[in-house]
Image (cartoon, rainbow, N blue to C red; front, side, top):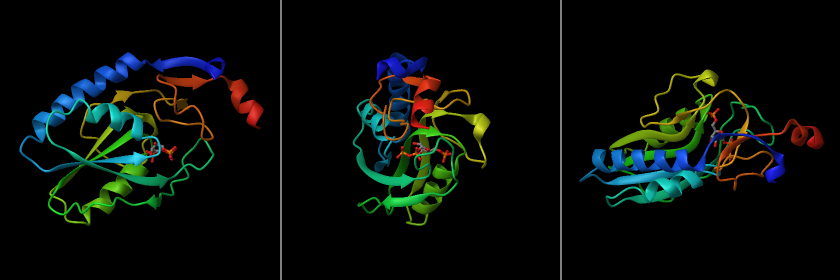
Length: 181
Ligand code: PRP
């Protein structure tokens, strides 16, 4: 697997430092409030796990599972809910946690969906941001690491289901795509 990496774009140390800064900020912003983190599966679980351990206030959590890309490397724009959250978010402050905001379609859809359930607020938090790919006007509320418009894997992000377990955010050798046809 390590032979398939072309370049490390964001190191595990940078990601850890990001989680620390954002976790501290969230702890300040939501002090005394009912906070629920909603991790977006599959990719969002890695950042969620790092981030929540940097949060020092009481926090509930849940997951939502969506699919937009399938096995391809570009967004189809179609967001499908595969698994919804289980908990009632009425009157609660919701923070959606993602690995990456790309076109923004997934987060816009999720924000709209969860906002219909009478939460106190819905905000967005992602580890990585590809602003050059944005198709919809959407505001991410917490600091994210800006990356160029390259297909990346690792830290939760996959190619054809693999490479999510790489601790750094990397590009893959063109050989990998060639082999998969
Ligand atoms: C990726 C990523 C975000 C979404 C961002 O997920 O985890 O959910 O794409 O793209 P957008 O801003 O263009 O909507 P993917 O669809 O690859 O699903 P996965 O996390 O299950 O791999």
